[in-house]
Length: 173
Image (cartoon, rainbow, N blue to C red; front, side):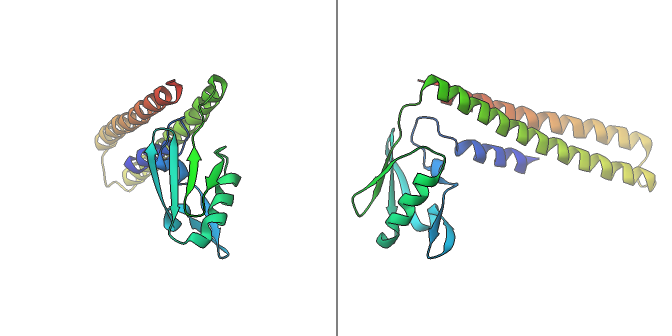
């Protein structure tokens, strides 16, 4: 369940909020000599200003491939390069676009909650199997189910808290 929360948090980090974040480019894969390679392995990404990302390729010959991959991503960023580095200006988000992004983030949070509930269901099935095999008693089964529900509630609460912070960040003007 902890892994589901961490995965949800990492997913949120890849969402554009109008503020420059190096995690924004984590999902981008570049076609580098015929192989899909994560951008992080081909370049250093930094955020020197609140609205600017700078991508410095380790191999200058890959600059066109990196630029192409950024253009093809759904981030809506327009790269500009000077032959050595790529600059990505993060434009101001409109109110309508902010609302759309909040809907996307809520969907990601729901996926995280579903992952936590799926883990709960798997553990419940394992507990019932233990009960069938007479390894645990009826009382132990009920106690374990109650504890499992508490743990599930804690993890869904963590996801809700992360969602709330991300929504505030997105809607902040």
